[in-house]
Length: 323
Image 1 (spheres, rainbow, N blue to C red):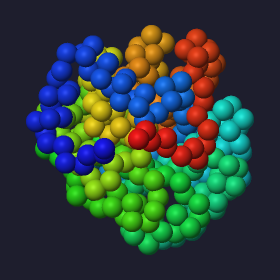
Image 2: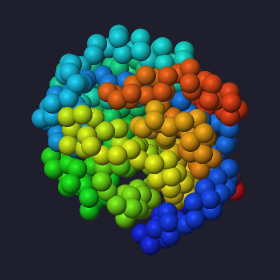
Image 3: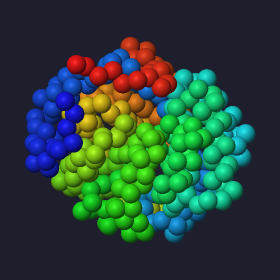
């Protein structure tokens, strides 16, 4: 039975349980609701890079920070579709397009994005976008164009949020998730660890996600990739044990969700990633970049899948819910 009434104390008890017990419990939940040999392969493309007016402390695309990321205008539709086709041929079944915007505006660029969504959908891929804040009408237009999922991460707990971002509120993020849900688009929302937050902040973020009226269909768990020039450039790398606690707790509290092993995977060994799959992760991003930060090479992922006897998950596969 799905629960949306978890208490912070219950989630804290799960998160802090002995690690091997936690992984075992999460693996059991995972096998009840998912095929443990299936992992979805996704590709993320930055269709509009840099120049963002926001001040997210982790992000090299913020215009106010001096990083190696150069600003580029919105890509042309044909180039995006060519990238989507290459991703499909390489084995991806979900194609996500990211634009460094604070919010979507009703203009020619949004019209181009709608054309991108239509084109990627026509390729038979699950099409996802992450474009910043949305109005209800914009969410409906994306749905009509064929959008399958919309990513809008909470990033961290509500209590720690103002230490990371001041240019939009936590309520703004939750409002966008509500607009996406009401439009009938699949919700993708997770966060980042390693930004100086406490365990209580990590638990708080999971509590917010797990007590939404409906759980997100997709929960990305990101480890901070510290980028020179951003306020978080000196943050130490997150340990795999912290990632495992986050993944396992997300799996237990949101059993039907796709838990996505996202940013920071490039720093993990095959053995560490195998533990993440055991703990309930069942999606990865493939391709040499995640927006602007490094990612694993596809050859590494193919070898890993072969070694672990993992199959790529088919697109648009309905969730298998155990009785």
